[in-house]
Length: 48
Image 1: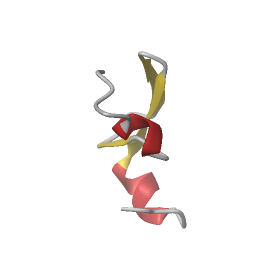
Image 2: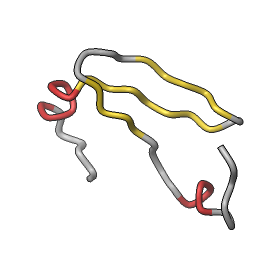
Image 3: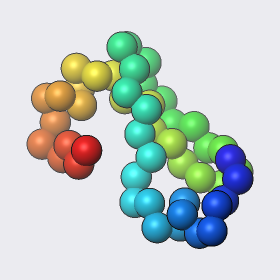
């Protein structure tokens, strides 16, 4: 993942919504959360 003008440094949370997978991906020192859609919909901390 290429850092574009510091954009990644300003992002608080990177999330991929998936139908059933849950894991954390580390790509070039950046953490990306993979969360099942149902879990995200039921959570209190939806920030999208």
